[in-house]
Amino acid sequence: MKESNRDIVNVPNLRFPEFDGKWMEKRLGSIATFSKGKGISKSDIASDGILECIRYGQLYTDYSEVINKIISKTNIDKDNLVLSRAGDVIIPASGETQIDIATASCVINSGIALGSDLNIIKTIMNGVFLSYYLNYTKKLDIAKLSQGISVVHLYASQLKTLKLNVPIQKEQKKITSFLVLIDKRISTQIKIIEHQESLKEGLTQKMFSQKILFKNKYGNDFKVLEYKQLKDICEKRSSNISANSLKRNVGNYKIYGANGYFQDVNFYQEDREYISIVKDGAGVGRTLLCEAKTSVLGTLDKIKPKKNTNLYFLFLLLNSIKFKKYIVGSTIPHIYFKDYQNERIKLPCLEEQAKIADFLSAIDKKLEKEKQILEQYKQQKKYLLQNLFI
Picture (cartoon, rainbow, N blue to C red):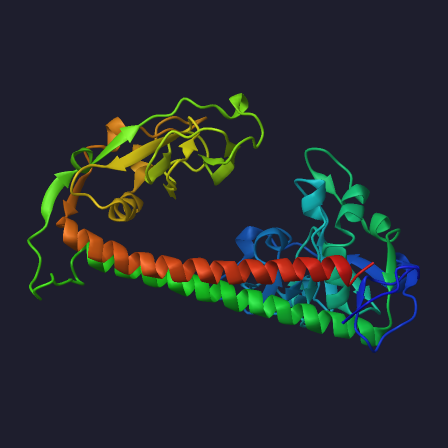
């Protein structure tokens, strides 16, 4: 790729070397026709259906820029439905927010039933190119076109006015091929991570149920597991720090919130590593291994191991507890240590705990590396989307 001459108008920042010249400015209405899908309700979805179909809500949850694998089917007669043509671009006609409704996907195959509340765009452009372009460069512009408050609507008459900068077909195809390749790498990386997480979960269950056993340094089995209550092997400490009391990012110490790292502060509560658990609000029951010399907000409790308990083993143990049964409160959910402290668990000796912890933490390190690779791919895609389009 090459950087474009910044003095030339209507060219992207990055470009493949075989292309030059300006991109042509057009309105979407001059290069596309518009239509709507036709009624497929949630109750019309059937696992034994004979016709593949897409409902508008799935664009928010199940699909990205390219749809080549359909997850739903229906038994509605196709003569009563609207079927896709290869390369159609679909956008929801209604949604909850303006930014969400600006979600485009290209349907690769013909003959897919397209449900109601879907805007269907048939264009002379490369459909995949248009899908990426609308989803990123034009997302805010589409959001501004939509109307409504509690329910947001997007109409063909509004989409027709959208201004685009369009390269020749060959350049469109080159750009889309490159972006599709990045997306395939992202998809493969996600599958690698899911496999590793599934492997870890399976091994953890087998180790906790002693279907996988470790030997001590003499090659013998460890002692029989002891039955303990959670309060016998760990203790809870509270925090009274509110998010509103903090100065923004002042200091060199981390403070954690419900979603992990919250910000930097100039103090810390704990000298050593510990476990935090969300006790109030969204994410209640979520656990996190926290670094030494850090703090937590008051919506989290700190859990620390007692003597003869390995910290990482305790973390695995807490993750195996079904905290849902201890949740109280309807508007704001809570869990309290006093309620789950009597949870009965099987505790191996400290040496066996350490072996289990070391084995599973090695998988965690591998997982972390794979997640870093995934993030690199995502950042690459973000950079390309910012620079390959106008």
